[in-house]
Image 1 (cartoon, rainbow, N blue to C red):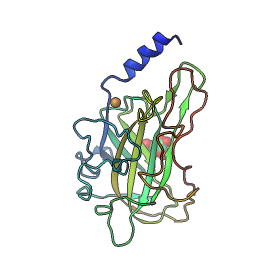
Image 2 (image 1 turned 45 degrees about the horizontal axis):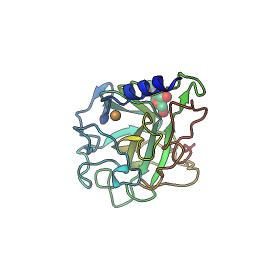
Image 3 (image 1 turned 120 degrees about the vertical axis):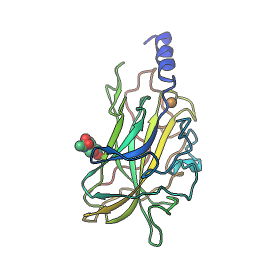
Image 4 (image 1 turned 180 degrees about the horizontal axis):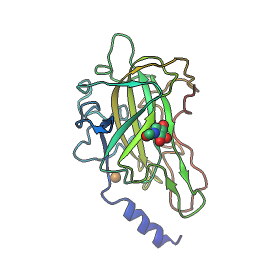
Length: 234
Ligand SMILES: *[C@@H]1O[C@H](CO)[C@@H](O)[C@H](O)[C@H]1NC(C)=O
Ligand SMILES: [Cu+2]
C-alpha cells in the first residue's frame, strides 16, 4: 500500500463512526436503552475511552454508583446480546469480561472495582499479512457472547469492550468502547478456570500493550495480540 492510500484509509476509518452499547436484546426484543446496561459517559457523544488507566475503563459510567434499573436473568450456557448504536464502525477486536458480584452487593450496587474480572471472549483479525485484514465485529449492529456453562451462579457485571485500532499506532490512539450489563446467572456448574487470575479495570491494560498501541495499516501487520488475560475455560 502506498502512503497516500494508507492515509486515505485512515481518514475514512476515522470519520464519525463512534458507537455505544446501550442495551441488551432479550428473546429478540431490544430492552429500552440504559435499563439493563449502565448509562455510559458517551451516551450522546458516542466517543471512546482513550486512557486505559482511567476510571472510565471499568464500565465507562456516567454516574458511578447509580447502577441500571434492571438485572437480566440468564442461564449459564446461553448468549447475552448487546445492541450497538449504531454499529461497530471501527476495525478492531471485540472482548467480553465477567465480574462476580461480591457478597453484600448486588449487580446494581457493585462498582466493578478491584481484581474481579475474567475474560470470556475475544476475537482477532483474519487476513493478517495482507491488505484485507478483517475483524469479526466489523459493522455489526448487535454482538453476542455465550455465558460459560461452568460459571458459579449469582450476580455479575458483563463488560463488553470493542477496541478501535484505526489510530492506535500512537500511544493513546486506541479507542475503547465499553458498557456493562447487570446479570443474574442460574444453572452454572461452577469450576471455571481463570488463567493468570482475575484482573482489574483500570489495571489490566497498559498504553504500550501490543494490542493497544498497534499499527493497523503500514507496514502491514502480520500478528495481533489481544490485550488482557487469556480467555477463561471450563
Ligand atoms: C453466541 O455467542 C458466541 C460468542 O460467544 C457467538 O459465536 C455465537 O454466534 C452466538 N450465538 C448466537 C445465536 O448469537
Ligand atoms: Cu470513533
